[in-house]
Image (cartoon, rainbow, N blue to C red; front, side, top):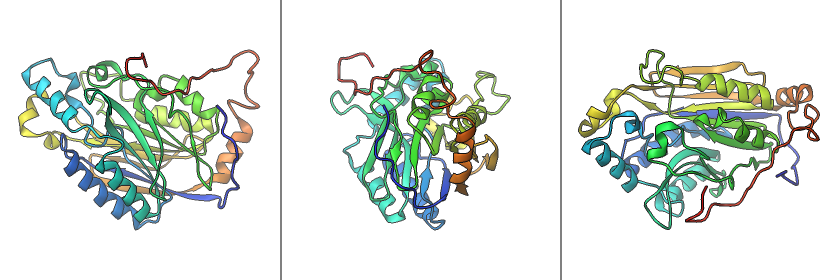
Length: 321
C-alpha cells in the first residue's frame, strides 16, 4: 500500500483553507454554482488546499433520522435524481474551478453509480490544481441511518495523493471513528488530511447525544498521524431546508470547521452557526517533528505483532463492498 517516489518538498509552508457554506439542498446545479463562488472567493487567499464538507454536493441527507413517510421517500428520490456522476458536468466544472484557483480541491459529493444510476456513494473527491481528478474515496461503511441512502464504498481511493509539498488524504465523518481507515492512511504517510463532516450537531440534539465527535476525532487523527488536519464542515440550519421537506427536519448541522496542527491543537476556528472561510499557513516542519516522536506505521509500531492488510480494488456492480 506504500506510495513510491516521494517528491522533494518545495516548501515548508502550505496554506490550508476550509470553506464552510450551505449548499442548495436537493439541487446539484444550484449547489455547484454556490461551490464555484466560494472557490473563487477562497482563491483570493492563494491557498494550496481548499476543502469542503462531507456530501456537500448537493448536501448531506439530513432526512435519514426522520421516520419513514411519503415525504421521506420523496426526499430520497430527489437526492438520487441529483446524484453526481464522476464523468458528469459538475465534476468537470469543479476541475476548471480548481485550475482557475491554482489550488487542490477536496469536496464531498453524493456520487451516482454510473451503471445502475440507482445507488449513491458518499464520496470525497480530490482534484489537483492542474484541473485533474487525483482521487475518489467512497465512504467504506455509511453510518447508522446513512445506510438507507448510501451504498458501501471500497478501498480503491483509501490512499493519500502525492503533491509537490507532501501527501494529502481525506476521510468522511465517522470513518475516523472506525479506526482502521485512518490507520490505513497513516501507514502510507500523510502530511495534510481533510476530515470532512456534514457539520457539528449541537450538544442539545436529543436524537444523537453521543455523535458530536467531529472535533475530537479530527484532533485525534492529527495527533496520531503527526499531520495537519482541515476539519471541513458543511452547515445546514432549519432555514436551509426546502419548505416541502420541513417536516423531516430534526436538528441543525451548525458547522464547526477548524484547522488543527500535528499536535492536535486547534489553530483556526471553530466556525459555528455561520458561513465563512478559515485560512492557515501550515508549517510542515512541525509535522515532521511530530512524526519523529511517533510514526504509528513506522518506528512506533510492531508490524511483526500487529499489522493491517488492505484490499485496494474497486468494488464491481453486484459484489459486496
